[in-house]
Length: 282
Image (cartoon, rainbow, N blue to C red; front, top):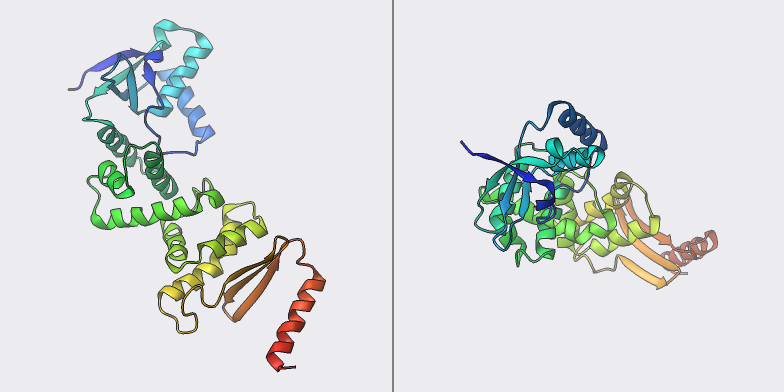
């Protein structure tokens, strides 16, 4: 049986590892806080001891540690809340510690596909790994090849669209994989421009704006004869900094969308006149 060690709160580095959950649930956090306050901590946290000093890095139990720290801050009760029970693990290094953290969280299965991909990107930003493949192999050592391929594809999608969606936890894995179609078809800039020009507020609104572009991308990848290559003909043109034209495939045909400060009724009338003149040859 693994021994439990009571460790002073100030000796635990909670952010030594990147966390795989970016969205907090205030209600769930408060419920945990009340549970710990009334019944104590039922499940110890997991830490590993730094080689270079006497402190510990947190592997699992971020929310439990936060609840105990809040109780100590509010009560200043050193005897009850000055330390926290912990299992001391002995990972081979940071990659192994990350894998242990992921394994503990996967049991609860409440990590969104967005956060799974974002976590891999964070480990690369912090230079724990050199490539996404290396990171995925290290933190998901028991994952099947199919699961690793899907995670690799979602990482590519999140990395490409993170500025447009930020924390899009409601996006399913299927939707993240469909975002990947935009990248493979070379239409990611068209999708980004659509989001930027329409300025939707919610993730769902953003998705509905780019859904027709994703449909087009998937048809490009399927070899649709009427689409040819994604950049031939052009899908997006910046006439000026105040006027942009985007071409989108719709179920019943094609649409030319004018956006920007100069995309007025007059501008659209002139554009339509030019299109009609060109088509009738007058």
